[in-house]
Every structure is written in structure tokens, then in C-alpha cells.
Image 1 (cartoon, helix red, strand yellow):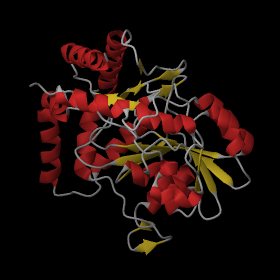
Image 2 (tube, rainbow, N blue to C red):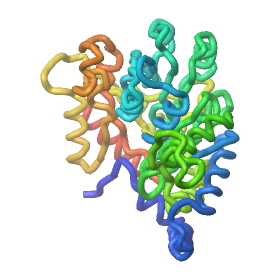
Image 3 (cartoon, rainbow, N blue to C red):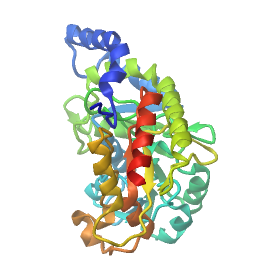
Length: 376
């Protein structure tokens, strides 16, 4: 039986394998494995791609968030508003600074947080907002910036799943005060391991983030503050330089895959398809449907469908089965089940179908046929 994976990195790397291998060997032969020219070049190139004056490579998208929060002096007594429907790193880094994550419910059509609920969550303790451009769909940054400016709040963009996405023609990561990127292998721009970056147009903040990620040091063995070790490895920077050249084409292929899914799946009842909002340029890190389930029974319709698809060789993923406000680690925040009904319902219904640039039309037809057959 043929298997269709949720993502296929082997297929993506095959046509550029010689370029990647050459880049890796060049680093190995140089004898310089920390810092060096590949890191500096990638930071410059990625900064230009995003449109930001400053780009600082770091160890991961998680560290990117921590660097941003630390550089803005966010800590005990502060609140940061974000979404409960995201990977835990978004809120986790807020907690690690000593600040308090504050959640608001999401919009069912976009999976991003509901901007109609944002102002009601702002208090005198609120210092920043972290919009997450989930699954590659940009948040309405025009409206978000207006609210942030009204209350004098920092905007830290979580762009982990949205490299190359745009809002009103502007690249995400260059709209807020700081942009945070992940280069985890499955991202639209991913390396062969962990990696991340922060972007900003503020020279003082850029200097501070660079200092924090180098053990709080601007000059070796002289430490101005308590920092961390969060370097972008030289080999990963070299790999990312190669892959950055293909990113726009890969994103366009993702958009074409998404459009084919729209056409193939639109006639199938019982599912809600994701859409691109007006003003946004979606880069489809995931193609996530909602398996509509009106029953209150013990058997989850989405989970049953996922199992049946797997038996037919169609692999899928669930992002995210438990919202952050219901996670054990955040019970001390006092959120109860039912407080964010849209988020909680989405967590029971989301299903991410196979999505990668090289997914063929025939494979998508197989996915569509299997979905239709299982749901009928």
C-alpha cells in the first residue's frame, strides 16, 4: 500500500542535495563550526528577504521568542497577550521570563486569535502582544498595530509557521517590533535540525538580542548581563543559505497545492476548509480542515476519521489536541474548560492533511477520495 506522508523532506531535498552537501562540506573543510561567514551571510540575506534592517540567528524559534521578550525587558508583573491555540513555546517563553501569558479565544475561520476580543484582555499590566501567524495564515496586522499603538504595547510576531507570508504586501516579521522565526525541518524554510532567527529595525534592540544570545557578552569574556547560549550553527546557516534561494518557489507550490485541495474537497460534506483572508498572503505550512462534529458522544469523529485514513495510507497530523489554557502546566492561571469555546471546539475537530511543495495532484486525489469515502 502506498503511503502519503504529512511532509516529505527527502523528496524536497533530492533536487538540491548536491548544493546542500557542498555547503556542508565547505563548512567542515573550513574548520570553523561556530559563527563565521556563512552565519553572517545568512543573517544579511534573511534580513533582506524579510525587509528588516537587523537579523540575528539563534538556536531555535523558541529561543527567538525568549530573546525578544528579554530584550524588551518583559518580566515579573508583566502580562503578554497571545493565543491558546499554538505550540506551547509561545506561552512557555513568556512564563520563563516571569511574566504572565494571557489568552484570548480564536477565530474559527483563520485559527488565529480573535482581534474582536483583544482590547478586553488589555490591562495596566499588559506590556506586549504575541500574534501567531498559525499554519502560514497572517494575522490582520493592520488592525493589530492600531490596537497596539493605542495602548502603547510591543508586538512580537511569532512567524514560526509563516516564513514568507505577507499582510497587505509586508512580510511577516517586519510588521511588529520584533519578528521570531523557526527553522525547524518541517517549516517552510527549514534546516536539517534546529535553528531560528529574530528580526527588527531597532538597532539598540538588535544589539541587545545579539548580546543576550552570546552569554550576555559583546566582547569575549566580558559579560554585561546574564544571557544564554543560543547560536545558529554554521552548518545550519550554510544549509539555510541554499534553501532560502528556493523559498519563494516552494511557497508558491504550497499555494498551488492548497488551491487544488480547495477544488477537490469543496464538494465533500461534513468538513470545513481553510481559507485565505483578504489582505493576507498565506504560505500554507499546514492545510488544516475542520471535521465538523455536532455529537457529544465519547467517540471523536475527527479521531475516527484520522484512523481510517491512516489505514488507507493517508497520514495526517493534529495541531493541537489540547489548548494551552487546559494544559496541566497552566492550571495555575485559573482558566476553566469552556472559557474559550471556539478554541476548544477546534482542538476536537482540526486535522492537518499532507502538505508539502512536491505533493502531486494524484496524491491529492487519493486524499480526497479517501476523505469522501470515509465520511460517507
